[in-house]
Length: 170
Image (cartoon, rainbow, N blue to C red; front, side, top):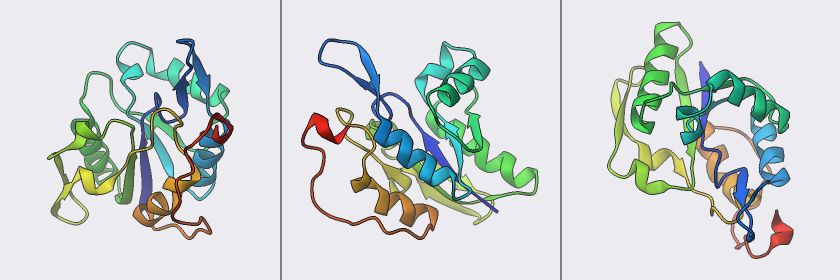
């Protein structure tokens, strides 16, 4: 059985700058790599997949320093359909998803959305699997305890305390 992190890019590890440009969050990439080093697959559900060749986008994310088993949700599918497709295909090919988390800075996308887990034969609320970092600072350590809980990973991250307070957190 496998564990999957469905990952958005913008607002998670690709961040906007006050000047209107973009920057990469080295902290977010470090945390993503910590997760993938524990055998978790990353499936990107970013909107960028709809206007960029998925293979080229995966190559770009690797150039950014993201390591591990990486895949891209099919272009043209919404987030719910992309997650449902992954759940169905992993079961079909004999390696069902036992745990998953969605890391996306836009929680409204998942409000009231459900998927059917073939492994658990149950409807799952996507909002219950969502961790939404602040899009100004992206993924930081404060989100890691919940991510690890949803993925059933052992960790030493400390809970509590707002850490998204300054650009130094990037």
